[in-house]
Length: 61
Image (cartoon, rainbow, N blue to C red; front, side, top):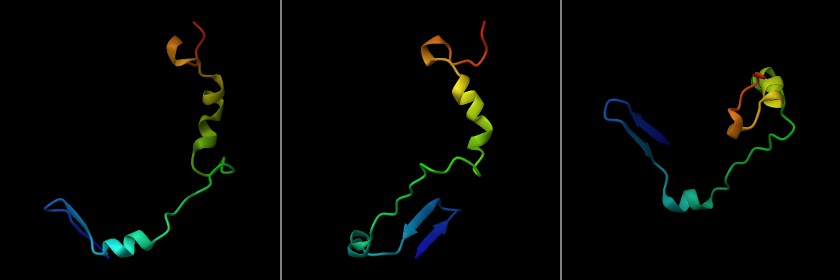
């Protein structure tokens, strides 16, 4: 269980250390996810943007 007290700014996890150590960490494989999260909207910019050392712009000056 998790307790959140927004007034005092505390977040408390009410689980023992042994319980946490026994849990498997969740992982996500997003290598095949290319749409649905807004990333597809910026693909043309990511493909066209220049190097950071050169200003990382999409415009040719």
